[in-house]
Length: 239
Ligand SMILES: *Cc1c(COP(=O)(O)O)cnc(C)c1O
Image (tube, rainbow, N blue to C red; front, side, top):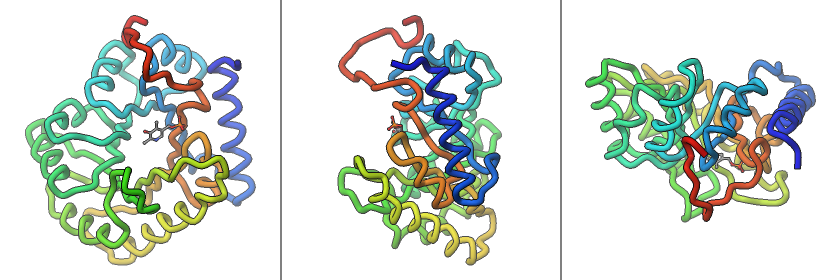
């Protein structure tokens, strides 16, 4: 098995190649190293190899890890967020990728007002219409964006999607393209307080295709840290 350092180098090489293929500047794509379920010791290895942007999908896990690691890291919240956990994420996450309801946005707004911060968020869209997935439907995205645009302490920066698990990444191209088109449609409405410049799409199995379709953030876990073992009970902080 390759080291985290070698994996990171390979992923960065693949990102560069995908950018070149699609005539994009490499600096237009940012890699998020998805460290969920992985112990702090592994994150430190990734930091030593040059990573500083990490993605987590559990609120307390992100809080606990960020508290024992250097302050200059960037944390992205990419998981389903329950309203009672919003307090752990607001003021800590650089970007919340997974807002899919007005109710959740209102809670984030309330907590942001309390902490006197502006929270940058993405709207999670269930482009592939999988019923197992969170996310707002393509049809309802614009009206959700319009509602959220009225909240004082939230700034919508773009869209996020999780494509289906597949062994053939080409199968997901249509979903990435759809998300990109949806962002263009919404941008054309010129809604106050709404940006559509960020597209968070692509994971280990399909990030190169996502880049070809316009991803600005790719979220790669397995490709950097190796397979996740959800059964293993380890101490994530000291382990
Ligand atoms: C776990 C996760 C990833 C990373 O998945 P890999 O296939 O391991 O790269 C990306 N995005 C989200 C939302 C995730 O939950």
